[in-house]
Image (cartoon, rainbow, N blue to C red; front, side, top):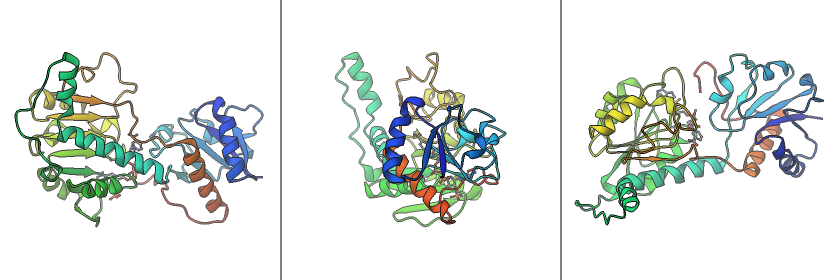
Length: 314
Ligand code: NDP
């Protein structure tokens, strides 16, 4: 019998996981990560969110590590994670659709200056904007990172009527999106857009990439939507850019430290909209269906997409 251990949602979530997999893969043995009776050598697959450091290494017969999230930094931050075992990121339609919806909402919030309406509402002031509203066709959004999330997000923004460009390591062709690639394409990409969507993974290369100087290259009024990871953006530079008007509005879903500490000046900043790392978070049924499809493919010796590449760091 193939054995899957799960660390997501705590032991209280195990009955739901068991019920889901009983329908999807009745032959699968589903066990709790914290069950002391599970022999680590008996485990075939581990579905995990923030595994305790050192535990995966002890599962010497693991066939794959299945990330409970699209990102994997909560797994790879443990230097002992077994790098010879395939690490598969969460996929499926649901998290992609959630991310598309979130970025669309954030883009329209920036377009219509929702931050100023929020301040007006808090102060009970009827805040009419002086200038006529821009339309989506007048806003150029640049998506940094065109992977499993960034590419569909960019195309959805284009379908919604925005002018859209995208930037990644390698050249891409995406419908309705002007694509730029590599370090040589970055400056042209930045100068062509006013609102930047950060959907890069956190790697040594991308950490600290969004600096004051980078934000200053955007057209005005400039906006930032960070849904990648907090450390991609230098927080002190972000505040400086917001305070001197280089950046008009920021919609932030991810932060250096999560939950964002109460002492952070970002909370009360009138030009910042904060969400609690909530852009994309697939439901358990969607995750279980995706995991079952991955296990089935791997058991049949087939390749699966969304495999983390330790050499690239994503
Ligand atoms: P992918 O790994 O599929 O894609 C990563 C993209 O980033 C690729 O297009 C890649 O380029 C590009 N990239 C990576 N490094 C560089 C670099 N140094 N320079 C230029 N481009 C680079 O990631 P996903 O789209 O699946 O996810 C992106 C991130 O979104 C996740 O890592 C996670 O941090 C975050 N996320 C946030 C969530 C939230 O709720 N806020 C939910 C889910 C994910 P290329 O294609 O050329 O290789």
